[in-house]
Length: 438
Image (cartoon, rainbow, N blue to C red; front, side, top):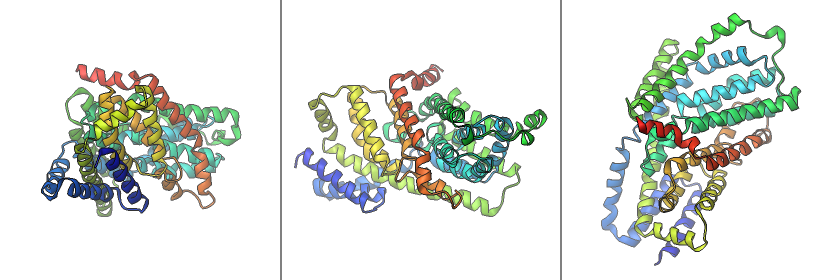
C-alpha cells in the first residue's frame, strides 16, 4: 500500500474518531498501534513502552506540572483582586481604563501562570461585575476578558510552548524569550482598540465618576499589590534569560514563589492545597497521555515515508515558502474552531515539521506564529475554551451570542498580529538572539 492511500486512510480515521468524541490521546495512540500491527507486525509493539518511557521522562515536559502548580496556587492567592484594585485606582478615570487595566492584568497573569483559564475566570469574577456596574457595554467588558485571557498562551511561561519544544526539539527558553515582544505588542493592540472604542462610543466604556476616583496617596499605596507579581515574573524569566536556570528549574522556582504568595496572604488551607495539587496532577496526566498517543501516531507515519510524500505534494503545486506558511496558518485557524490546541498540535506538527525543515523555516519563529494561532483557537466559535470559561461566570442575562459577538474584533487583531510577525520575523528572533550571545 503506497503512502498516498495510507495518508488518506490514516487521517480520515483520525477525524472520524475525533468527531465521535474519542479523546485525542486514544484516537491518535490507538491508530498508531493499529497501523503498527497491520503494517509492521507485533514485534514492533515494544515501541509503545520505549516511546512512553522516553516521552514521560523528558526534562522539557517536567516543567509542565511545575508551571501548572504555580498557576493553581496563584488562582487561590487573591492576587487577581489586588491587581484589579490597583488598576481601578490608576486607570479608572480614563475612558475605557477599566477594560485596558483588565487586559494588562491578564497579561501579568499570563506571565506568571501560562494558563488561559486562570486569568479568564479570575477577571470574569472580579472585573466583569465592576465594569458592568460602572456602565460599560457588556460586549466591551466580556470581550476584553475573553481575549485578554489568551495572552497567557503567548506571554511566557506558556504550556503550549513547552509542548511545542518537546515535539520540535526547539529550546523552551528561546521560545519563552521569543514570545515576550509579540506578547507586549498584542497587549498594546488590544488596549489601542479599547481606546478607539472609547473615543468612538464614549457611552460604551465611561470613566469612573469623579467622586469615586482615588487620591494620589491611594494610588501610590496600591502599587504594593503589583510588587510580588512583577518580582515573580522577573525571577522566572530572568534566570532563564541570564542562563542561570533551565526552564524546568525556573518552573520550580515559580511554583515555590506562588506557594509562598499563598502562604504570605494567609490563604493556605488543606482544601486549597488539595485543589491546587490535584488540579495540576490531573492536567499533567492528561497532557502526558496525549503526548504518548501523538508520538505513537507520529512514529508510524514517519516510518512510512511521510516527510518525502508531503514535500512532493508541495513541490507539485509550486508553492513558495511564504505561501506554505500562510496555508499552514489557515489550516491551524480552521482546526482551531473545532479542536482543542493540544489536539491541533499533535495532528499538525508531525506533518508540518518535516516540510518546515526542508524549506529552511526557522522553527523558533514558526513556534511563535503557531502559538498566536493557538490563542485564536481559545476565542473562535463554536468551541473556543475561553468562551465557555466566560459563560460559566457571566450574569444570567448575558447569552452565548453576546460572548461570541464580543470577541470578533479581537479575532481580527490576532490575525493582524500573525501578519505582523510574518512580515517582521525579528520581533520574535531579536531577544533570543541576544540570549544566544550570552
